[in-house]
Amino acid sequence: MLNSCILIGRLVRDPEMNYTAQGTPVTRFTIAVDRGFADTSGKKQTDFVDVVVWRDQAESVAKYLAKGRLVTVQGRLQIRSYDDSQGVRRKAAEIVAQRVVFMPDGKKNDAPGGVEPPPLPEDPWVGGDDEPIPF
Image 1 (cartoon, rainbow, N blue to C red):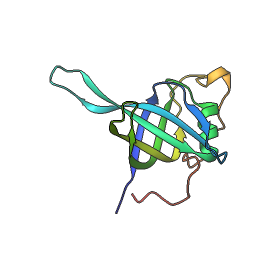
Image 2: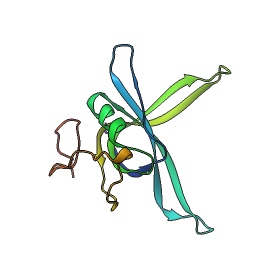
Image 3: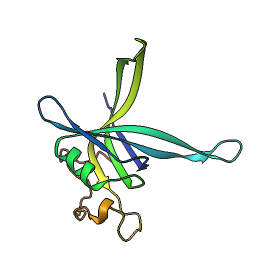
């Protein structure tokens, strides 16, 4: 079985970091991803994709990323179920990120508060395992 996603998009709001009861950092954010084609009226279509990232990457994402920042996310699709406030069973789709790349987008200083993220390594994939991408 294969469950792998790679998306490039912009954060629609600042990331939100929390900690589990065991103290593990977890950060959630949403990216806007263009579909690459327009509808019949000529308007571009955009998907808003929820992303969750864990541990050290969660801390880096919360520290260095902000609304409008361009990122590449590589991870797996996860569908989870929950009960809403009225007791209705709902489903939510999200990407559980294994790697997050802070993409340069041509702005001189686009980090929040003027704090620059660490420079991109030669291999720009940040964190996650070191398995090669199979293509």
